[in-house]
Image 1 (cartoon, rainbow, N blue to C red):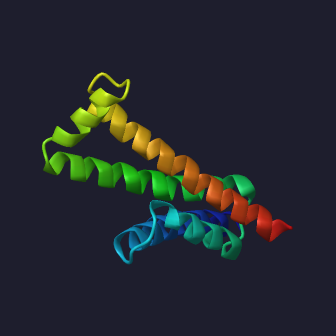
Image 2: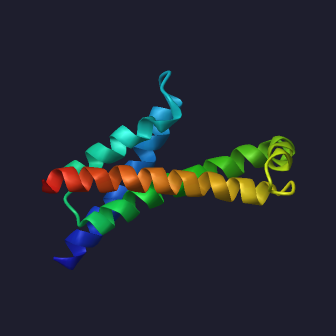
Length: 121
């Protein structure tokens, strides 16, 4: 029973990351399109609301963290340092990447949590 629960959790994380990446790359969709995919994943894969939240949050948060870091490293942090200077981050590109990951973490998690609650009702 516990192995099934862990497998569902891992599959939810991977599906959240994969589908968030897919909707971000393909089509002319807004940045928040992954909310719909996380919502659907949480409805289909039955888990507790807490596990659904963390699966969606980790999937999108880690994806955004990785993508932000790779894209930022490709241009030697030029753009992120300028944006971080405009914000109250004192030019820290690391803080800007962390905030990006936190936003993805929270939005992805809340979408999955909402899907979990809809499934329960």
